[in-house]
Amino acid sequence: MDTSNRLLSSSFEEGSDPWWWWNETGAQATFSLDSTTAYSGTHSLKVEVSQVDSTWWHIQFGQSGLSITESERCAVSFAARALPSATIGVAVMQDGDPWGNYGLWQEVELMPAWTV
Image 1 (cartoon, rainbow, N blue to C red):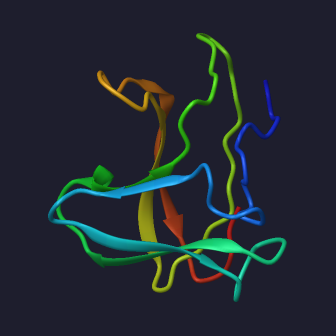
Image 2: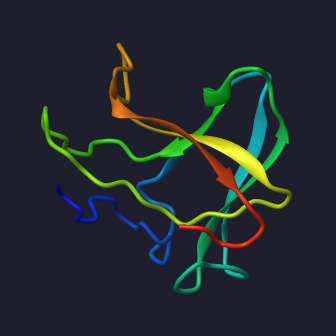
């Protein structure tokens, strides 16, 4: 199983590039680099959700252009927290039509303390 880090700027120490974020009409969130709290290093991405709708994927952030080979097993891990506690969806999927899932869709419960 491949456990190498394929993400660029995975700890946001080098800024937010090449991360992207998106809101669908009906859901609203702001995304910003935060230098007041971090799991490691000095920065994190802060997502402030002000409005949700009934569709889990209407607020997103991610990276495009990652290479994943068919039948390849990869580990996905990240550190996150939420105030108040919240459930998020985590997916590894195609970033364009037909939006295929590459084998990961999972709900993750975030708590006020950093969790990996």
